[in-house]
Length: 340
Image 1 (cartoon, helix red, strand yellow):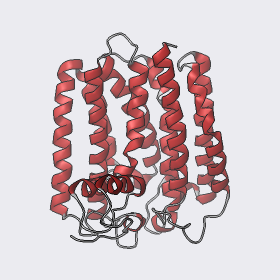
Image 2: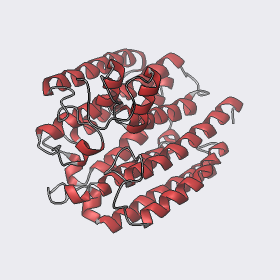
Image 3: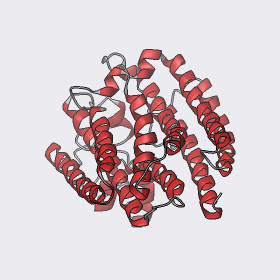
Image 4: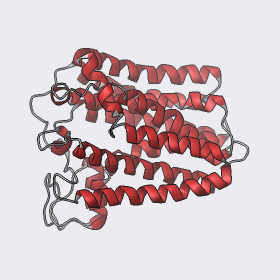
């Protein structure tokens, strides 16, 4: 395939520039796709940093704990990144099979849909998902032997919720349960599961400390589902923003953003997060811009060079999540270095 939709770069640019562009925009560069760029597009790798951040939060909470093993931590981190990639592949597969992902649905507009764009066949997409899941299964077997059955509980719980998000018969997204699923998966399941794999035990305060980042990730999904209300509501897809209505969903999304800061302060006061995590308040300027955007009408047209239209609120929320998540990792990193 020599060209795909959403071209962004001249084909003569270097590979690293092409890969960075895919990671920044979710869209492929112009010209024949190299294998890495193709894989990054297929797996929607631009959103994998959210999972990387969750893993780093777990690792930094665990690094000074008794029993910490850097090798098991690295393997668990690889496991959750592969699980997220697999989830993206399966979501595209299931949403295509159920007729949701059509040529006019946002998923096919903000970036090439693997099947709809002709980038890969349904059989190829299924094979890719199965391959990633098999590699993840191998990681699970190793960690299971090293750390015991709780590793399997975290991994299988995450797999079940991720698959049920779009797969029949549950289709959690369609029943207003997609947003709580993201909070659980990117909070207690990811952070708690990686922490357990790295250390071999899981204090209750670590599960509590996982909640702030889970809240951040949930704001991104809220934004995405607000963007999709005009498409989802007529199709009977009752995401939480469809149930609440756009105005109510915007307020809830803002409330989740505020709850992130409140929860960090509360956990610091309880001694369950180090005081250095108050660095997250450095993201307040980003929050102010996002808050204003959630208070304002959606623009009628995309801003210049805006890569993921018709998504708007999702992209804005992602910017705040990326900034606040990075500062949370920074605060935890300082605490780990100085044993605070």
